[in-house]
Length: 153
Ligand SMILES: [Zn+2]
Image (cartoon, rainbow, N blue to C red; front, side):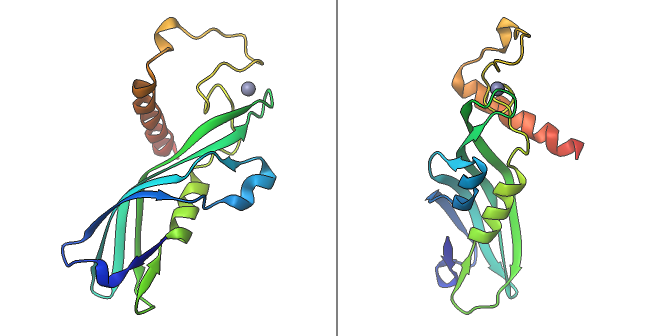
Protein backbone atom coordinates (compact mmCIF):
# COMPACT_ATOMS: atom_id res chain seq x y z
CA UNK A 1 0.00 0.00 0.00
CA UNK A 2 1.79 3.08 -1.24
CA UNK A 3 1.08 6.62 -0.16
CA UNK A 4 1.93 9.42 -2.53
CA UNK A 5 3.58 12.17 -0.56
CA UNK A 6 2.27 14.87 -2.85
CA UNK A 7 -1.27 13.87 -1.95
CA UNK A 8 -0.73 14.51 1.73
CA UNK A 9 -1.77 18.05 2.68
CA UNK A 10 0.02 19.88 5.52
CA UNK A 11 -2.81 19.06 7.94
CA UNK A 12 -2.52 15.34 7.21
CA UNK A 13 -4.70 12.86 5.43
CA UNK A 14 -7.23 10.29 6.58
CA UNK A 15 -7.10 6.99 4.71
CA UNK A 16 -9.70 4.30 4.99
CA UNK A 17 -10.19 1.23 2.88
CA UNK A 18 -9.25 -2.32 2.13
CA UNK A 19 -6.03 -3.91 1.03
CA UNK A 20 -5.24 -7.35 -0.33
CA UNK A 21 -3.73 -9.94 1.98
CA UNK A 22 -0.27 -8.85 3.14
CA UNK A 23 0.68 -12.20 4.63
CA UNK A 24 0.07 -14.73 1.83
CA UNK A 25 3.22 -16.70 2.62
CA UNK A 26 1.70 -17.80 5.93
CA UNK A 27 -0.70 -20.13 4.14
CA UNK A 28 1.89 -22.88 4.44
CA UNK A 29 1.65 -22.40 8.23
CA UNK A 30 -2.12 -22.78 8.20
CA UNK A 31 -2.87 -19.07 8.35
CA UNK A 32 -5.02 -18.00 5.45
CA UNK A 33 -6.46 -14.55 4.80
CA UNK A 34 -10.25 -14.83 4.89
CA UNK A 35 -10.80 -11.42 3.36
CA UNK A 36 -9.09 -8.12 2.69
CA UNK A 37 -7.33 -6.12 5.37
CA UNK A 38 -9.32 -3.11 6.53
CA UNK A 39 -7.44 -0.01 7.55
CA UNK A 40 -8.31 3.36 9.02
CA UNK A 41 -5.27 5.53 9.35
CA UNK A 42 -4.17 9.13 9.46
CA UNK A 43 -0.94 10.06 7.76
CA UNK A 44 1.10 13.23 7.73
CA UNK A 45 4.43 14.61 6.72
CA UNK A 46 6.65 16.72 8.94
CA UNK A 47 10.32 17.68 8.82
CA UNK A 48 11.53 15.07 6.39
CA UNK A 49 9.65 12.20 7.92
CA UNK A 50 6.27 10.65 7.65
CA UNK A 51 4.00 9.50 10.43
CA UNK A 52 0.91 7.39 10.42
CA UNK A 53 -1.42 6.02 13.03
CA UNK A 54 -4.71 4.23 13.10
CA UNK A 55 -6.06 0.72 13.20
CA UNK A 56 -5.96 -2.43 11.09
CA UNK A 57 -8.09 -5.53 10.89
CA UNK A 58 -7.34 -8.68 8.97
CA UNK A 59 -9.68 -11.68 9.03
CA UNK A 60 -7.75 -14.94 8.88
CA UNK A 61 -8.59 -18.61 8.95
CA UNK A 62 -6.61 -20.39 11.66
CA UNK A 63 -6.46 -23.95 12.89
CA UNK A 64 -7.16 -24.58 16.57
CA UNK A 65 -4.09 -26.03 18.31
CA UNK A 66 -6.32 -28.20 20.49
CA UNK A 67 -8.99 -29.67 18.19
CA UNK A 68 -7.47 -28.77 14.79
CA UNK A 69 -10.77 -27.25 13.60
CA UNK A 70 -10.47 -24.26 11.32
CA UNK A 71 -12.03 -21.02 12.46
CA UNK A 72 -12.07 -17.37 11.50
CA UNK A 73 -10.20 -14.88 13.64
CA UNK A 74 -9.78 -11.13 13.22
CA UNK A 75 -6.23 -9.96 13.64
CA UNK A 76 -6.64 -6.51 15.15
CA UNK A 77 -4.02 -3.85 15.38
CA UNK A 78 -5.82 -1.18 17.41
CA UNK A 79 -2.82 1.14 17.63
CA UNK A 80 -0.95 0.94 14.37
CA UNK A 81 1.68 3.66 14.37
CA UNK A 82 4.79 4.43 12.43
CA UNK A 83 7.29 7.20 12.00
CA UNK A 84 9.73 6.89 9.16
CA UNK A 85 12.34 9.01 7.49
CA UNK A 86 11.51 10.04 3.95
CA UNK A 87 14.09 8.49 1.68
CA UNK A 88 12.42 8.26 -1.70
CA UNK A 89 11.02 11.35 -3.38
CA UNK A 90 7.54 10.17 -4.28
CA UNK A 91 5.94 7.44 -2.28
CA UNK A 92 6.13 5.55 0.98
CA UNK A 93 5.07 1.93 1.06
CA UNK A 94 3.14 1.22 4.24
CA UNK A 95 2.74 -2.48 3.54
CA UNK A 96 5.91 -3.69 5.32
CA UNK A 97 4.91 -1.77 8.47
CA UNK A 98 1.35 -3.10 8.36
CA UNK A 99 2.60 -6.61 7.71
CA UNK A 100 4.87 -6.47 10.72
CA UNK A 101 2.08 -5.32 13.02
CA UNK A 102 -0.28 -8.00 11.74
CA UNK A 103 2.34 -10.65 12.43
CA UNK A 104 2.92 -9.27 15.93
CA UNK A 105 -0.78 -9.59 16.69
CA UNK A 106 -1.19 -13.03 15.22
CA UNK A 107 -1.93 -15.55 17.98
CA UNK A 108 1.00 -17.98 18.30
CA UNK A 109 -1.17 -20.81 19.62
CA UNK A 110 -4.65 -20.12 18.28
CA UNK A 111 -7.60 -21.79 19.94
CA UNK A 112 -11.09 -21.90 18.51
CA UNK A 113 -12.64 -21.03 21.88
CA UNK A 114 -10.31 -18.17 22.76
CA UNK A 115 -9.62 -16.52 19.41
CA UNK A 116 -12.60 -17.94 17.54
CA UNK A 117 -15.24 -17.27 20.17
CA UNK A 118 -16.65 -20.79 19.81
CA UNK A 119 -16.57 -23.79 22.08
CA UNK A 120 -13.61 -26.06 21.65
CA UNK A 121 -14.37 -29.76 21.41
CA UNK A 122 -11.51 -30.45 23.78
CA UNK A 123 -12.96 -28.41 26.66
CA UNK A 124 -15.94 -29.50 28.66
CA UNK A 125 -16.29 -26.27 30.61
CA UNK A 126 -19.60 -24.62 29.83
CA UNK A 127 -19.56 -20.91 29.39
CA UNK A 128 -22.04 -18.97 31.47
CA UNK A 129 -25.11 -17.91 29.53
CA UNK A 130 -24.10 -14.27 29.93
CA UNK A 131 -21.03 -14.88 27.83
CA UNK A 132 -23.15 -15.23 24.72
CA UNK A 133 -23.42 -11.78 23.26
CA UNK A 134 -24.58 -10.24 20.06
CA UNK A 135 -21.90 -10.17 17.32
CA UNK A 136 -21.54 -6.39 17.49
CA UNK A 137 -21.06 -6.43 21.25
CA UNK A 138 -18.66 -9.30 20.96
CA UNK A 139 -16.38 -7.36 18.69
CA UNK A 140 -16.08 -4.59 21.25
CA UNK A 141 -15.35 -7.22 23.85
CA UNK A 142 -12.53 -8.64 21.74
CA UNK A 143 -10.87 -5.27 21.45
CA UNK A 144 -10.90 -5.00 25.22
CA UNK A 145 -9.36 -8.41 25.60
CA UNK A 146 -6.63 -7.46 23.20
CA UNK A 147 -5.87 -4.32 25.16
CA UNK A 148 -5.59 -6.36 28.33
CA UNK A 149 -3.19 -8.72 26.62
CA UNK A 150 -1.06 -5.84 25.48
CA UNK A 151 -0.85 -4.43 29.00
CA UNK A 152 0.41 -7.74 30.33
CA UNK A 153 3.38 -7.76 28.00
ZN1 LIG B 1 -10.58 -26.06 19.29
